[in-house]
Image: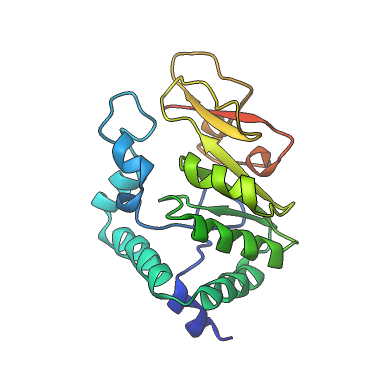
Length: 210
């Protein structure tokens, strides 16, 4: 496969200044659960950073919308092969985040990501998501690769983590963090050498709202 062929299924990004490795983003306006939460005051989606960025930067908006459209238009195996190709080519740190903007669209999308993870065992994959129904169904019937961690994100600021999931995340504001606190805000919003988000032994990570 050539790069020009692979990116017809969507682009893996290497340009996230906060994260190690690579990331993948889609249109944040297309979130399912997130779209409902955006109108709820006090929710973790009410002031969505990705929506703000899409409104502010047309090139970002176009790129993320294009990634979603290409996913929807691609044949299943071609999308998987294209993501694997790009990860093998561009990921040099061994860590990948799915959805630094947007969220899971369907159970089949999660199945496809799990297959990508299986085919890239040298890379640790992390999915932050609010799609509880999709993840619950996947956990019940599907194989979970060892190198894939799915963190269910709390819906409300200062909300408690969901007890039905092994890996979760919360957001705290003027309150004590639950479990392990993300310290990126103390490092100019940078992960530094921390890799807790990808670590299955870390049950809950609490992000400070700022």
